[in-house]
Image (cartoon, rainbow, N blue to C red; front, side, top):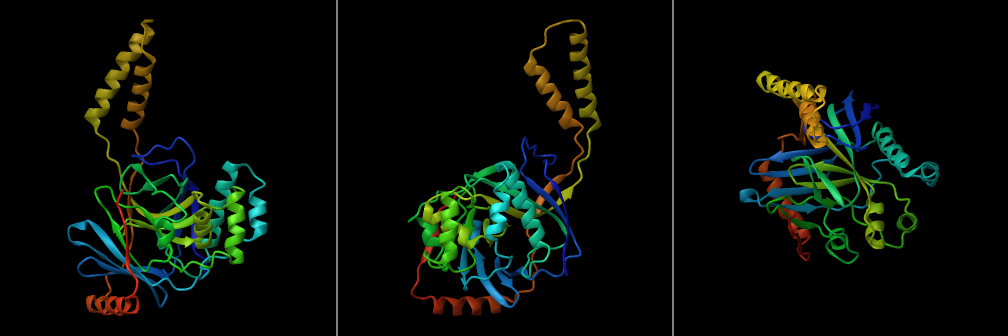
Length: 333
């Protein structure tokens, strides 16, 4: 059954004003129960399942200093249809700005019928990130994406079952693969590496998980690996769910601003000189005072249906199986 996804260009909200195209706002309806779902247990523990397959377990540390993630890293599965060379060639005939918008609409189209899907009814955003800045939904700003190095932490991270993400004071913002990487000389990875070198790589589709403060790859595992092998930053399409809060006006503040605007207008009518920066600030203040667009609050939906003892037993079994491997530690931002 296809999900109903209505989309429009994202122009920002009450707290964010975008001067250029940033992505799409999605309104989801007719969505079945997500097959890719987060389940939580007591004492800051969680598990991510894709159908009957457990992909990862996670535990937030006391004091909320970071999170330890145990990844199953099964063999690669295609949750979304593989991007064809025909699709790449078709989209690359357009200008770079048009290509970006076409890839985002492509993701919306394939997400409608994906067998494994994280999307539930409600509001979502699909936001563009250029690989040097990752948007952090908790705040109205951008956080750096950690450096990409061919033989650095990011390359090791592709293979590490156990990862500790240090949140430090500013979070972590790491991109995490959910499947084991393919051999670097596999046909698909070699093809993507060629497109990386030609500057034709499609964005990587990731899902922001608030409880991890990290981005999980939904589509683009081979593209991520190809980018790391070529030491080139990829671009990202970040999927996040949110709800809206209505903005209530403040009549006293609005009246005070209108009085100031009238005073400036009288000075202009009298032919008095007004500093252009004052006029610009006044226009922005006036627009903000009467802005009734709602504020967004980003969330990750989960179900509190995971038995704590089940989580303990599964992680203990995981650790016995992976006893020979260490834990990679990634510093916070």
